[in-house]
Image 1: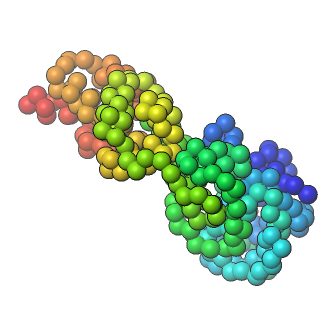
Image 2: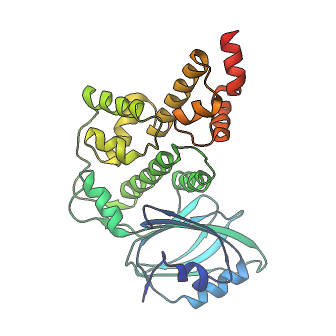
Image 3: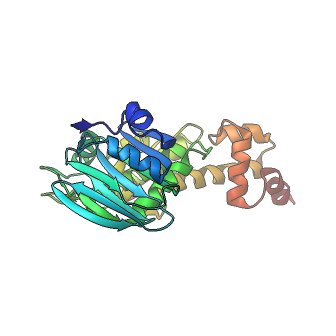
Length: 306
């Protein structure tokens, strides 16, 4: 049977009674992160209800177990008894037969885990847009350490709490990094990444000018990369190589520099300065300014004039 890991039924019914702590939908639902917590006893019952199946999507299983745990897994015709712990992942490619059975342990033990679910068409399009052509052969992977994917998953969860007009840039950068990691570590491709080795001077100036010209608006990775004629994934990688900053960090730093200039040279109220640098809520602007400058906008203005 084919199992749709991205459907609402999967999170609500097939995995009941484990608690779905949160579902983060990205790229119009083409990527989802599902965060769960469950008693081991309940997880065993849910696993017993799911037969050998083929995932409809590519699935990264992220293990947040507080101590080692034994599992039995069938994956693409192979069977393995594995001991896994926090920091491990298992990669289930789309259409690869899989079956999981948790081992025997304290049935009242509470464990947490996540699924990063990626539509195959999205990953294929991303690869193609960055010079990876030909068939993609994804590698079914039993539990193995992957700290990078765990850090990305944690950051995606935290990103929902980021109240910043550049938050979408941050989220897109994280998503691109996760997909790049999957293509690098869990796929075999016939052709290497192609494309320009660096941004040209014109492209870099065009990107920076675009950011300055639109600093009062909601900037996203797609619009900036389109201004220089590159894919979002390729642009983000080359922009960081050229500037030392991710697009998210660069945009935030540019907003703060503009805000400091306005605080020093004008008597505009804080609310208007916040709007001029892309923040719709003055409280969000003040919180970000304080985090970066270690003082409030009012305190900075008084100090600059003193």
